[in-house]
Image (tube, rainbow, N blue to C red; front, side, top):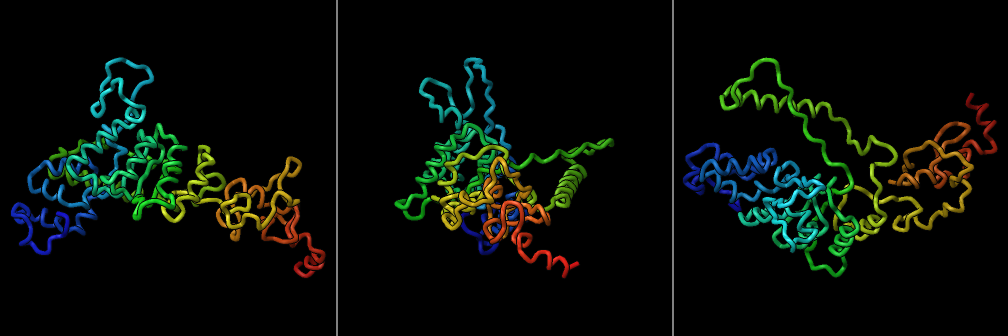
Length: 363
């Protein structure tokens, strides 16, 4: 069902006789319902009847968002010691097996199955967080016509060659690229993957059978309660609450040039520093911070400022240490770039000649 049905008479006969199928045949309802079901649940639903199977595999919105992080066959769990004769379900270990085929074998097997049932082309949001993902596999997702992924999440993945991935992204965003490419518009790669949802605690009383109406109602009530508790516990985004360095691991310097090359084409879950120390910043060359007397050194204590000023914009931790200081006299923070007249110890107001007069006027 590549397009929405205009009326009930246009629906297949199997769907016309089921009120639930008629409701799900509405593309708007189906698009809002499908993201709450895992891929495993969707395939189980399609196996219940021919009508459900027709609805699932002929509606592109069903597989619009694909989450593979919790799929058992997508996990890469191989011991360091070779036990001999180990065969995966998705890839056969033999002499012709390359390193990329070895590490990306589970995901390639899943993609091949989705390609065979003709639903891979409908996937626009793909989450591979925590799985074994190689740079070659990302290159295939970017360039293979069978993929239509627009948002890709590879946070906390294993066996990823970041430098090769950077080269792949820069090549995909080159000026001589074909029109309409790359299809990818957003990449999540820097932040940590989402924590696993906490399992509901079992009560002391005996729970009803999960197949009984009371059991189904109790299960859905528990899910609703967990979702409400999680929503109430949520505060603002952790990105804006945390100060200083945002990433636990060191970021490869090659990512800076990659984000510059992909600017306006692919969005990332991070931003470039706008400080004057970086050539890609609009403030580059406007202020020679190395020649400033306020630049931190071993003999000058660093100020305890963890955020850049409003005029500086988004700055990295190193740029904040160079440009943001704490006044020893008034204790206020100041920027050595946008507070003219300040020095390494005091802000521009405290070093003014008429400070004593201002104090008498104020106090």
